Amino acid sequence: MAKDYYNILGVNKTASQEEVKKAYRDKAHKFHPDKSGGDEAKFKEINEAYQILGNPDKRAQYDRFGTAEGFGGPQGGPAGFDFSNFDFNNVEFDLGDIFSDFFSAQGGPASGWGGRKGRNNVAQRGRDIGVTLEISLEEAFKGVAKELELRKLVRCMRCKGDGTEPGTGKIKCKTCEGAGELKKTQRTFFGVFSQTAVCPTCHGEGQYPEQACKDCSGEGRVRKIEKLSIPIPAGIESGGVLRIHSKGEEGIRGGEAGDLEIKVNIKEHEIFERDGADLYSELGVPFDMAVLGGSAEIKTIDGKVDLKIPSGTESGAIFKMGGKGMPYSASRRGDQYVEVYIRTPKKLSSKAQKVLKEIAGEL
Image: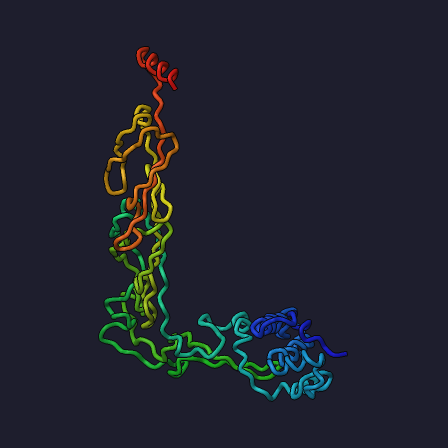
């Protein structure tokens, strides 16, 4: 009976090539015979399935004919991949993409086994730093510069980031003989395969300080407090993030510095509510002004103005004040919406009560 390669890898027939590859990697890790709970037969079967489904042309032929016999391999296997007669003891593989995690678990150095890294990873980018700033709505309206104090790793001034004590030099690494990387070869049932890793002694440089810098102990970085002035642009919304390039922590061995990410939160305002570039507020007007009309002083984000109240204004009426909201470009602003409520007097003189009754009788 023909093997169902899709079932072996645990994917649907509509799976993308990337999904097939991911399923293969996962199962290869799981069933590798050198791991606890591994299964040699299952591992061979998984590899057989991937040789078909991992090749678009072979996969198309397999999908068309429903078997793998058309590929010329025995027992439905692909040509050239008859694992029953395969000599695993005389073949060398570089399987870093699949087994990198496996070697780390088996005791590879902290710098990481897996793939041809070597000198390409000598320089490492510094860590990004994230902070949160809280500002007022007025500061968000005008824009503001905020002072920050960050305790972070910066370049060592004594050695200029080199890690070497001034007046001394560097010597060739004896562990890797100046190569900057080490090669690990292991023989298993599947053959002999090798992995390369960054040298744990010189960290991939091929050399190390003859005498480490006294200030940074050879790392090239020291932890210090750095003061920064951060410009917050006008109109920024709460939750907005500013990213400042190269203001994070210093990189390692010449790597670029990380970035500084600043999340801006705007404090709640006692008068205004904000929706994008628009502001909302309330205004209480006396009963007589609501009836007769008049002018009421109202606060905006940039000062006080007079708002005309038409006669007969009802409670809940909303007035739009164009261009009195938050800025959203160099020359444009949102609007301010004012909801009016009528302040009803709690105490009236007998004369005022008499007048109101007369008015009510006429209405």
